[in-house]
Image (cartoon, rainbow, N blue to C red; front, side, top):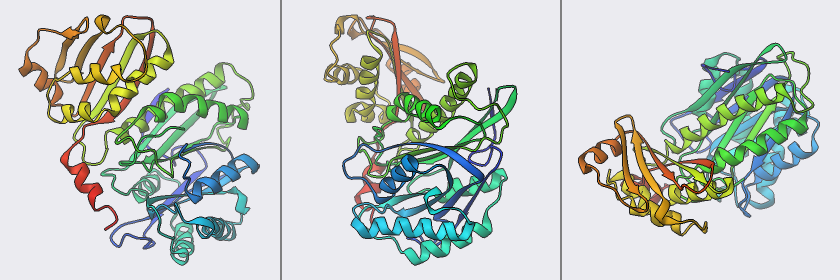
Length: 407
């Protein structure tokens, strides 16, 4: 497996585009297209929020019931959530317009929206934007990059990644793009992720791979503890790599899962590291826990703690806050066995030993915590299971961004 340049257009047969349709923003692209030149097997995971946006309801129906998907239409600026029947009808109108423009069935079109909750989409601009997207699409890396930029809201940077790997003796590629900066606490942001691959694989195994991997990737990130109404991870496979179809577990399936994991971890960290107002990607690894589930719960409890996040922002090694966050996680452990370390490009320091503050240099610890990527390692010394979660620091700018988000 080798990391390569690119995103949703890195795999064979995938095209993308981004255009300015005037959905809400007046100064940037706000619609994007992902399109395959041949039908795709599709798998997806969606938000667990009871309040689900209209695009989530539409996409769940087409992924579950359609034979294949071939196009995805995404808009930024308006989430199409809490919009009732009118909002759902706009999903259908979007799919119908895409079907007419591209000559494909309407139930092979997925839709996705991100932005302000409660506003209705300007469907005339959406339909016009579909024509613009068709004219603008292309299969090179730049077109994928433009699409990644076009789905941003409060994101400060586009998020793309791709890997090349071998399956069944054939070169295959998997790539993806995502957006997410605030309202990020997936439990499957407004977090949207689109992954494309040219591997030939059954829908059943594609779905299994995605649902198993999301547990240790997107479900292990948090920016602010708010689970969005729109969270969607959509995985498309068009089979153009030419490998023998993966329809049973084995070496080829394992190779695909490894590549998928690489994409999903990379995109997860990009989202966490671009949290609204943040200055630092904060990683928490819990190791030597008694069970995998307990390791996940402990890591997620630390990453979501507002006090811990504020501590990282202040570059203050107040590690008692990490002990506290693990203590209220609901996991039973012996606090007098716990060791905690901080790591970054500036070094490594132990701050807790056997549940008590260790002797260390505050100056060294502050230097380590002042980097753009900081890791806390929590050694439970109670087993052999490990889990990692990703988040960010909590800054003044987070409140500023969200205090007047609608305006």
